[in-house]
Image (cartoon, rainbow, N blue to C red; front, side, top):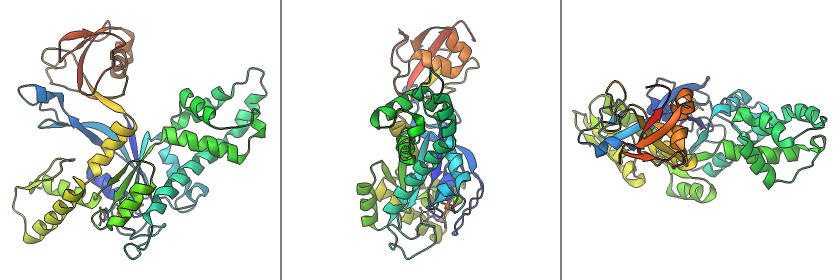
Length: 395
Ligand SMILES: Nc1nc2c(ncn2[C@@H]2O[C@H](COP(=O)(O)OP(=O)(O)OP(=O)(O)O)[C@@H](O)[C@H]2O)c(=O)[nH]1
Ligand SMILES: [Mg+2]
């Protein structure tokens, strides 16, 4: 499963985001370092379910009237402070939790109402663009540290006659999600000494920055947009060289709770909601305030941030394997039982391997269930494809 990690300084709203997205119970409070241990939960990215093309909706647990939520793992990480890579604040242990992340949501307090340590200050007194930059800097320096800690091993290997720097670095960096192609691409971009023993800290840092950018791309969540001055949001948008999504995690959490209580009709990622239950005047005022923010930002931003991370940054597509190409069901008659988030450019054979190694190894051919036509092994799959795999293995 794809892992999305929430990173950011204390009090930015990571746990609120996490709680809203996963509806798990974690501590949410207005003091720094509320999260003492990383939390792991499951949320979903939203897409159009292929069942919209059928006469009836599929009724899958993860489909709400044609809005399909495809599972991704979400990690809540404790707040980072400047110097975290050297152990400041709660330090390295939390950066280490980012190791498994495929993509990072950098949650910043766009209101400027908390300083770099996450302590409350007058709204607007702190420049939120600093939060965007320092979190990225901490991640880069943390990775530089990981590389430095393991450099002796690279030096040792370099004494062997058949030494290959690409291979040695790929081995070192595979744990943070880097492939041989990532290492080769970064080495092509930077200048470095041929002999590993001659590498300086600055050389390793350049390598770290390149690898971090490729293996842990960042979406900036400009949170607390409900109380953020407009110029702060402009400043973040202009200053950050990455996608920026204004958000109100608080608003999303309130809506999800209200939806669970039957007070509103709202599905995560909707641009608006409807009040359908009895609410007090106070609740109505609170909901109206959220609606106002949603109107300004086209929703609460939480779902949009998750979608931007997976579909835009990681460039994934959603593909649905089925056994019956006519009914779009699995062996038990469940309609559109599974959804896979594959890299763009994935082929039917890649899908077969994603379903199961045995199915991949026994792959014979595939059928596009929308058109009921056979598709070639090297055919690029597209978002929303429904595919029957014919394999010597499995059903
Ligand atoms: N106004 C406003 N407040 C928010 C929003 N999201 C979170 N908050 C508040 O910000 C405070 C901190 O939220 P948390 O989610 O605990 O922050 P955190 O990033 O997990 O903090 P640490 O675990 O200490 O790193 C809480 O009081 C939240 O209610 C938002 O969208 N708008
Ligand atoms: Mg927290």
